[in-house]
Image (tube, rainbow, N blue to C red; front, side, top):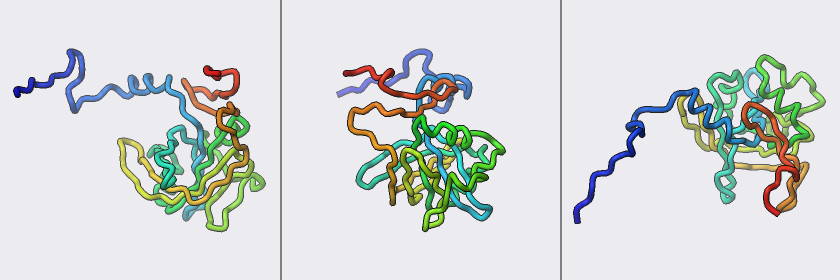
Length: 187
């Protein structure tokens, strides 16, 4: 049997070339992401950052992944941490999402909004859900680090029944959005 050489369609970049950063960002602006705040405790105290890259990977074992940008001041502490807390947010948590995304803000100034778990990690009170996780893998990826973590503990403050719309908080096209019954497409 003779195989034909595989060739890329005309106009397709050769392997090793990339689209521009602006084109890549333009493509992903239309791809919404759920919002989370990642916290850790390090030598200089607690850190937090907002992420739209959190994804579940496996239910058994319970694994999730997320990425952190090298540009964030919280990144070195999160990368060095053995354990972190991933706060999964909904629209009621918009102020925390904004705080985690704002440079130069002391995200822990109001000591009534957070505490340390008995294991030491900072946790925000009243969020939809949080997971205390053990970091199991780190991978450098361009200007970011992808972190895989195993959930060790979970607290769900505002649970959703299967099929219930809730008030999910997503980031889409450089803006915060609330998903709810009004955005549901199926019956």
